[in-house]
Image (tube, rainbow, N blue to C red; front, side, top):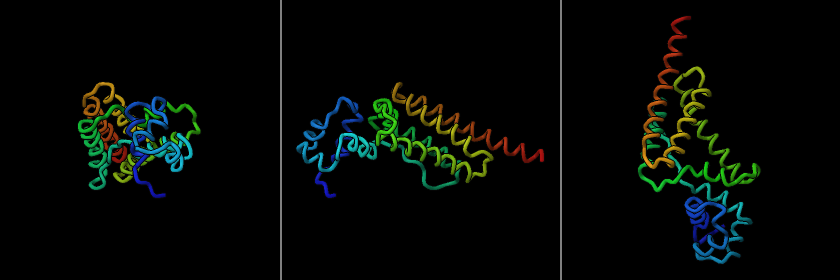
Length: 186
C-alpha cells in the first residue's frame, strides 16, 4: 500500500524514545501529520503499528564478509560503533519486551524472530569456522552481545561493549583450543 509518510518510522522513534504505553495512536497520527483514521487505514491496530515500528528500530549491523572468526569479532566492533554513534537508550527488543507482556503480541513474535536471527548468525559463523559445538558458542556470544547492549544503556559508556568483545575473543579462543586439544588426543 502506498504511503506518503513513513508512519511506522515515526512511530518507531516515538515508541523507542518515550515508550509504547506512553505513546498513543493520536500522538503518532499528529506527529505524522495524519488523521487517526488515515493511520488506521495503514495499520488495523496499535499492535500492528508497534510490530511494524520494530522493523525500523535501531539495530547493530553484522559484518557480511571476511573469515568467520574475524566476522564474529567484527560484530562486537560494530556494537561499539553503534553504541558510540547513536542516541542509544537501550535495546529496543528488551524495551518492547518489558512493555509487551502478552506472549502472543505480534511485536513479541518479531522480537523472537530477530533474536533467533542473531543467535543463528553467531552459530553459522562458528560452524563455518569449524568449531565443534557452534550452538553452544553462539549462545555464549549472544549472551555477551545482549548483555553489552543492556549494560551500554544503563552505563552510558562503552565499557561493557569492550569487555564483551574481550570475553567473546576468549570464548572463541577457548573453543578453538578445545577443538585442537581434542584433535591432538585422538
